Each structure stands twice: as C-alpha cells, then as structure tokens.
Amino acid sequence: MTDVLVVGAGPAGVAATLRAADLGVRTTLVTSGEFGGMAANDGPVPVRTLAHAGRLLRDARQLSQYGITVNEPVLNYSTLLGRVREVVTEVRTKSSLRQQIDSSGVTVHENAGTARFVDSNTIETSAGLRLSADRIIICTGGASRRLPIPGFELTSTHSDAWALTSIPPSMIVVGAGATGVQVASIFNAFGSRVQLFEAGPRILVTEDADISSAAALALQHSGIAVHENFGAIDSFEKTSAGVRMTFTKGGHRFDAEATLVVVAVGWVAETSSLDVAAAGIELNERKFLKVDEYLRTSAPHVFAAGDITGHFMLVPQAIQAGWAAATNAVQGPTMPLVDQVSPMGSFTEPEYAQAGLTEAKAREAYDVVTSIVHFDVTTRTIIDGRTFGFCKLIADRKTCRVIGCHVIGERAVDIAEVAAIAIAAGMRVDDLAQLPLAYPTYGGILARAAVMTAGQLGLSVGWQAHRAEGVPLAKHR
Image 1: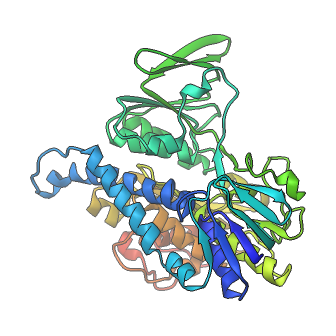
Image 2: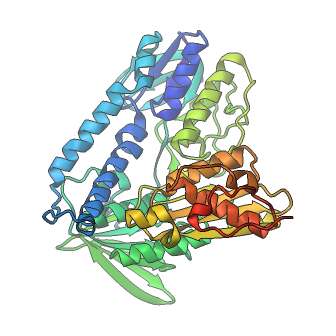
Image 3: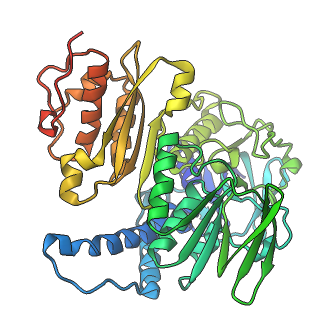
C-alpha cells in the first residue's frame, strides 16, 4: 500500500504528486490517459497553438502596411495539426514537472483507463490496475455538459472540435462563454462560417459588461454571426450537409444549419465512473465533489483538487489547489485554500482579460472610480497597428487602491496580469502611476489608466512617469 495515491495527471494532480513526494511519503500517480491531463493534451497547450496559427494569419495580412510584400497566406491544416502534435509532445515529455516526478521516486501509471473506487482506500482502473493507499487525492477533472435535447448525439464538444482533421465549411457554436468564444474565434480565423448562439442576454457573461459588448462587436466585425438571447433549443436533426438546430423564441420557431454543431454550455465534474459513493464521498448541490477549506471530501482521508471541485477551473488555480491538497493529506489540515486575485484571459481574436472585480461587482461593495484608455490613442498600439480595444481600471475611492482591471485588444492578458500583481499587492493608483515602465509598451497602457484614475481622485503622481503618452497632469489633493 502506498502512502498517497493521486488520481489524475493534469495540473492539479501533478502539483499534488510533487508536493506529496517532496514531503517524503511514498507516492503513486495514476492517470487514465497521457501525462499532463487536459491542459497539455486537450486544453491550453493545443488550443493556444491553434490560436497562434490564427494570429500568424492575421499578422501576415498586415505585412503590406509595413512595406513587406508577400503572397496571400494559405493555411495547410494538416501541417498545422502536425505542429500541434509536436508542441503537445514536447510539453508533455520535456516539462520540468515531469522530470521532477521521474526523479522523485514516484510510481507513475499512465494510460491506465478510468478509475473507480472499490472501497474508501482502494481504486481499480478499467485496464485492470488495482491500487490502495492510506490517503487518496482525486484530480480527474471535468467533462463537457450534455443537454437533454432530442438529437444531442449529433453535436460535438469543444474537444471534438480540436480533434478535427479538416476545417468545416460552416459551424454553429452553442454557448458563448470562454470556451465557445474560443472555438468560434479560432475556426473563424481558419475560414469556417461561424454562427455563435448564446441563450443569455450577452456573451462572456462572467466578464465586465463593457468587455462583453466590445467582444460581441469585434466578433461580428470579423464575420461571426452573434445571436444573444436566442431562445431555447428544441432539437438537432441530421441533414444532407450537416446538422440543423431548431429553436424557439417568443412563440416562434427558427432553425439554423451548419456542417458541424459544437455545444459548449458548461463543465461538469468527471465523476460518472468514479463510484464515489463506494468511498463515502458526497457531491455538492452543483454535482462537484464536496470539499472543505482544506480540500477534504466527506471521507476524511480522501482529498480533491482541480476541476472536479468546481472551484476556479483554471490551470494556475488547479496547481495551487493540488499543492494545498497534498500538504493537507500528508501534514493534516494546515493549509486552507483561500481565494486570491485570479487573472483570466482568452485565446480569442481579439484577446480579452480580467483581474479583480468587474465594475458591477465593485459597485456592490465600494464607491468606485473608473478610467478607460482606448487603444487608438496609445503609442504602442498605434505602432503595431492594433488600435482596437481598451483598458478599464477600477479603484476604490476610499482607499485609492486598484480593485479591478478589464482589457480587450492586443496583449490584453499581459496587461491584466500586471494589474493582478498591483491588486494582490494592495497598490494605490498613484503608486502604480509612478512606476517608470518602459516606453512604448502595452504595460504602459495600464500605467496611463492609473494616472487618469489618480487625477479623478485628486492624487499627485509626482514626476508623471507616463507623460510621454500624453496623459494630462493629475491634480493634487
């Protein structure tokens, strides 16, 4: 019997495995598929590679503006897929985390098939592997939500979309959260005619409302048909050319047809085969594994981390949770998982990103001031010919601290991550404004927003680090 058994080799599972091994206990890692989980094999790594190809196509079409003459770029999708496989393999095999695991004495079982609990200390996989441990950490991730709609079996998931071997002439994407917008944006860049359907009042509902509106306009301008508040789906039907979706709104029936329909309407815990009841593990009201602040399940020696808990289903947060779960599994309940500033970004065109509170959420708890810097007046974006977008900064009037930042446009993620550092450090806007960031850069756009916000608050920003951007002098208190 091993001391700690980790089930799942995604970001949470890998982090948990490394932490348990570092703490000196006998550790075993078992995964249904390849090392790296969804992040390396079906998530950010392959998706970002595909999105990068889309960006290269976009950039190639801009070359003539800078006096560079080339032929119209043509996508060879089979070659691109070869590159995706190369990247995934390199990330999986050359990852420093894999090297650390291999050198730490951990027993690793890859491609073991799906796991299920036999009892509270034992799991068995579909490949016939049987493992027991004093403590178990479940990191099996999640799966796309299915809908109880006639003909749903005719639809595809986002994973199916990434696995395509050719570009579909047309595509319907149902669900305009982060995943659905990624699918729509990438395949639109590759030449598919894309229709994006969102049942809610706006796409990207977890983003700041101004970002959602700007993203919808940008997607429409790129050729994507965006349908918000479209009604309710009645059925999917096979046609000679693909799939027809029938839906109802306001008592009237409509339909849309495409070669492929991708449904991305949420993410659920991957518990269907685990038989968690055999281990005495309960699910919460959202059907994710129920855990306490120390990531313990209702079986005290079984912990869980990552998507299966439904908590911030992102790679950095999964790594943090895996580390905490392993610490608590080995040392007892010593490391509670606390919410931290979590910058989030997209692989879309255009990029969008956030850090901290949206303006709506901020106004529920604070007296706020906001400043918006549009990209058509900032030096670096003009140089790069990327003048669509803006950076919105939100500050608390009482403390003058930065509490939110929302960006859409080129390098949006990079800007939001700088803002996340400022938020986590509790920086005031005048402190942020005085940082002498390099000129002209995208990070400087954030500092420009800070100068504008400081001016609204009547704060002095001293020597005005970013007057090169044409920001008017801020007032003194």
